Image (cartoon, rainbow, N blue to C red):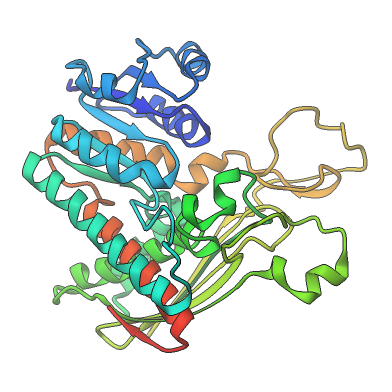
Length: 390
């Protein structure tokens, strides 16, 4: 049985998600070979909790280790590109969180349309740099877009293949009440707001479905060709100021907290994507697919496989119920296995099999690049108030 040795760069939330997924992989032996983090104590705690063989002082040290086959990049978005390029040059396969890259750092005094154009150019240049490094090294780029692997999405794809209807309209959304990470507050460190941090999931799902449709139909690839977008920064509105106290995160600095965009495809179909940091009630991950002969609705979260009720805030102790909920009283959707419903273990299964058999993953570099392209075209559209071509 093939053994794949994994090293983690970062030991935060996404690293814990991915290591739990890796523990469920079958048919490939996964060795948790190493971890590094900015705060050494977090790397030590992560290694102890998950049985990781070794901790490294820096990510450069981890990349230099011959014991590592693939690195799992679980760091803030602005660091993805540098580490991914270095990992590829070191001959390591790359698992990268979403979004793959973007435009980070100071705006150099640019605002509005000028800033949007500059950001799009920088994002595309970063994509090209990652693509070049990966292709030159001959390693795999494995894009951690869990929506592609969610059971609801996998079943939808099987039904689409059987029904053979044409997809004409996709509606997809990810929303919740706001990120608590300080880096998410500023465009300079986050690369964008709700569209960047949340919208990348439904955008990726829509692009993947249209690509899959083309493969099943045996036609030329169906690509995104246009984007029309509007964004809002609700925290900077009279409505929010008038309300006073708010349960939604409100200490943002210069990023959008709401975005709606329409993606036009080369076959005349479309996708409507919503992303918001202004929705209470936990994380919302949903999609709808309308075809010429069927309708598909995926409700990953909140998922009503289990509903629980208690009037006591301490009634369920420390037991996990649902991500981002503001209260633990009343009726709550308590996901029996939220990771599985969202596709995290299935994602790692595909990645390990891809590495072991030297094949491309279902979610790879092409999808990762297309998502970033759409996001920054959408920002340009929002600033210019018009449809933008890809």
